[in-house]
Length: 445
Image 1 (tube, rainbow, N blue to C red):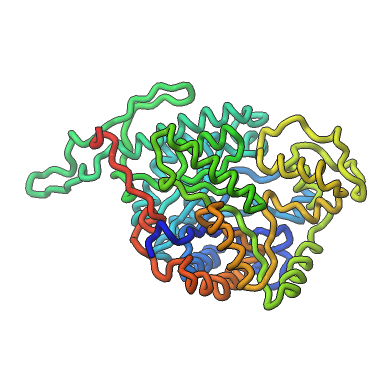
Image 2: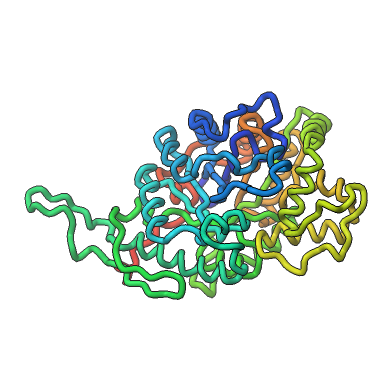
C-alpha cells in the first residue's frame, strides 16, 4: 500500500497530555514538560506506532494575568522551545516527521528559514513548519505590541513571510556545494541565488548560509479555519490541521479547501487534511466513558471559565456558573482563533447550556471519542470512507498512557484493515506523506 492511500497520522504532543487535568493524574510525570528524556521516549513510542508527524504546538509567551486559574492549568507556562526540542529528538528517531509551530508575527524570515533548514539537515529530511500568525496578546506584548494586529493583516504578513522563507530555501541549488578538493572549490558560485526582496513587511538581500534542505523545503503545515485562513492554506499548506466535530462538517471543509487549490496551480494530492481527534479507549464503552468523565470532573471551575473566556475573547468572571451565557455578552467578532470562537458561539446559541456545563463540554474544537479499540477504528475509517479527511491529528488526554493505548490497541486494527502502514515507505517526511519534493525555482525556471 502506498503512502497516498493509507491514513496520515500526526500526534499533538504535550508533556503530560492535552487534557487540562492531565498533570493531576498520578500516572503522568510531574516534570514532563522540560524533561528531554521524556520527549525522547514519546517520540520513539510514536515512531513505533508508525506516525507521520511528532508535533509540538507553541506560543512565545507565558500568561501574566489571571494566574490563579492558570496555576491550575499550566499550559505553555513551562515548556521547551520547540525547534530546539525537535533537534534534540532527531538523533533519537529515524523515520517520524518532526513538526513545530513558529509564528510569522514574531520571527524574522531569515532566522526561521535557517532554523528549519538546519532541522531538516539534522533530521535527514523530516522537518515540518506549522505556520501560525499567533492568537494571544500575551505574545504580542513580548514583542513591542499592546495587542495583536487585526486578523486579516496578520495573514497578509504571513503570506509575504512564507514567500520570503521559501525563496531563501531556494537560495542554493541542490548541487551547489561540491567540496571539490582537487579544484579547491567548496561550492559553485553560479548556483547561488541571493534573494532581493523589498515588500510591505520585510526587506532583505542575501542567501542562506546553509545548503538547500534535504526535502527541498520542510513540509508546510497550517490550521486556519477562517476564509482568509483557508485561502492561505489553499495557496501554501501541504498539511492542514482541521477541527470539525462531525463527518458532515469535515466533508464540507475538506471539499471546500481542496476545491480552492486549483486557482493556485495546485492539485488536491498536494495537501493532506488531518482532522483533530481526541480518543479515550476502554475495554468497554462504559469503561472509556468512565475514564473520560473522571478526567472532566477534575477540571477546576476557574479553569473551565478561563478557557472559555480566552477563546470567546471576553471576560466571563462575573457570570454565574449555573446560568447560560447571555447573548449580549458574545463579542461581534474574533481576532484570535476564529474556529474556536465560532464553536463557542454555536454552543451558546444552539445548545443553551449553562456556563458550568459549557466548561465541562468545551474541548477547543474537538469532541472526545470514547469507545473500545474497534469502535475507535470504525470511527476513523468512517471519516476516511466519507472523504472527510486524509488522516488525523491525534490528541491524547494523557501522556504516555493515552498514546500507548492507541498504538497498542487501535493501530493493529487499522493495519489489519490496510488503513495504516506497517513500515515507513521512505526516508523523508515528504516520501512518507506521499508529497513531491519541490524543484528549485531557479532550476525549474
